[in-house]
Amino acid sequence: MDKILIFLRSHIVFLIALILVSGFVGGALELRKSLFVGSELTPKTFPPEIISNISPTSESTSSSQVTDSLTITPDSNNTLTPTTDAVLGDSTDNSAVAQDTLPPIPTSPPAPVTFGIDITHSSLSANSVPADNSSKATVNVTLENSSGGPLGGLNVALSTGDGAVNFYPSSASTNSSGHVSFTASSYSSTAEAVNATIKSGGQTYTIPALGTITFQSLGTSSSSSSSVANSNCTSAAGVPNSWYSDVYPNSPTDRSPAQFNVNTGSTVIFSVVIRDCNENPVTQTEKLSFSSGDSNLSISPQVAYTSNGVASFSVSSQNPVTDTITVQDDTSSFTVTDINNSNPTVTFTAASATPLPTSAPTSTPTPSTATPTPISSATGTPTLTPSPTI
Figure 1 (cartoon, rainbow, N blue to C red):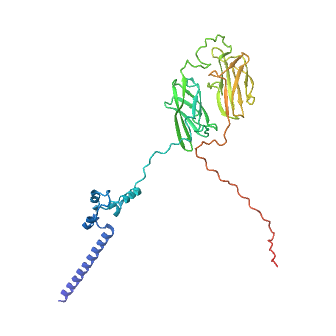
Figure 2 (cartoon, rainbow, N blue to C red; figure 1 turned 90 degrees about the vertical axis):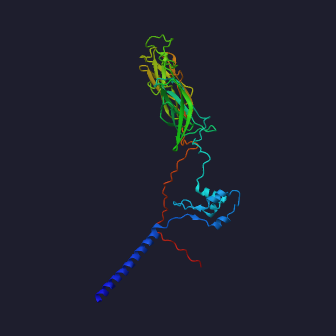
Figure 3 (tube, rainbow, N blue to C red; figure 1 turned 60 degrees about the horizontal axis):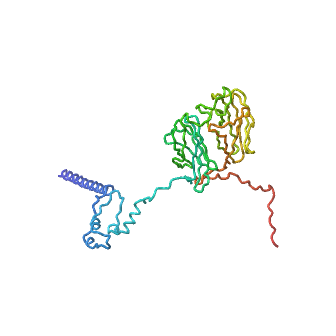
């Protein structure tokens, strides 16, 4: 009998412990569910008495607005929190909500960067040379603002739509007068519209078709060194002839017009080639003299002698002027011109110390690094104590 009671007692204790453990585990699971899972979202509806008390306050509240406001389903992404005013159709509060949530719509595109360039005052001009891809035309660009003021310090690059023209250099900056010059060559004998791309301070502005340049078909050039035979050239071989003699910029291989645009103080070199009717440099020595109407123009030398038909001279000036030089063959008594039958010309322009465009950003000034000198005091001199006033 005692054994039966002991058996029942032990099993009753085990059952009670099992019930307690089950309750504890179940409570823990419910607690975990309430903490981490949450209750299921249910749509919220207004009581009928609230719906029946809603009355339109203005013509802007329609029946469709009331119907749409009956049921509100919470946004799972928490991106919209409806308010009582929005539900009741308050047009003023709705506009405020829209202004807070929608970005403003731009009314017009931002103004393009122009660096203050005015097209009517700016220009691009060029002379015409043969389309042999070696003859170089001089291309002059001038950039000015709407008041006709020059825009200096702007980096300019030239190009054409078909890429048939080669420009040298690839880019250059305008001087204080707003001028910059290039040379160009091409095989194309058509009129090419030249585009000018301007850069400064990380900004870019392109002027389409700022000007045109035309390269002449081969055989129609007015150049004095043209391959077209001169019907008036009847001189014997080796005899100097003015039609086929030329003055070139830099060297005899640079068969460009002898026209320069440089800063004051620059030295410009010209080369002279004296040829006969067969376009061959003459071997006899010719005396050449160089002169200008400007007494301040430095010409060196003023007299030169050819060697195998070639001689050279240089000019420089400290004044911002345009000088025309006369090259005279004193031995054969004729004037030597460039390939466009023009006297060589140099335009000297005063260089600007700070060539900045009107609207280009300026650099940040460099702070001074000077170290202040400390004021030294006498060493070993005791400080005097003022005597008390009696």
